[in-house]
Figure 1 (cartoon, rainbow, N blue to C red):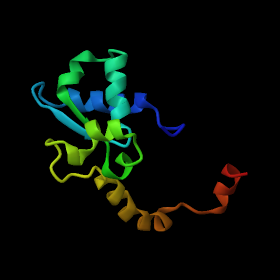
Figure 2 (figure 1 turned 60 degrees about the horizontal axis):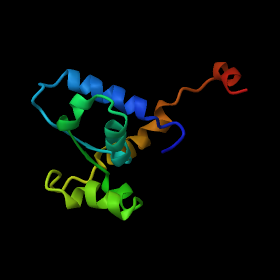
Figure 3 (figure 1 turned 180 degrees about the vertical axis):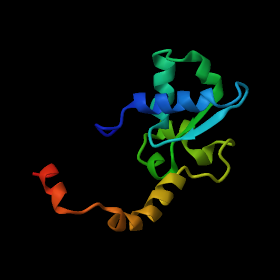
Length: 116
């Protein structure tokens, strides 16, 4: 996990999502560290009511960097729940948006003091 990537933020987002969904719905989460998120919920008994509501997986690109045992449980191609989803939709979306970055940058002399 990257130093700036904390599980707390993911859990906060998931809690917000679950607050807006019917209680009977299950949620699938394909995430780079989905295996760690699932294990944390189980190990620390944090939000035990969430366990039956989530199906965790590791996105395809990151799954091959995980240990074999992790791939057996969390690889989307080894589970009937994911179909052909690869968990990289957001990555492709942000990749397409990167062309907008240069045109959206704010420039001007008044910003130089922020970077000094």
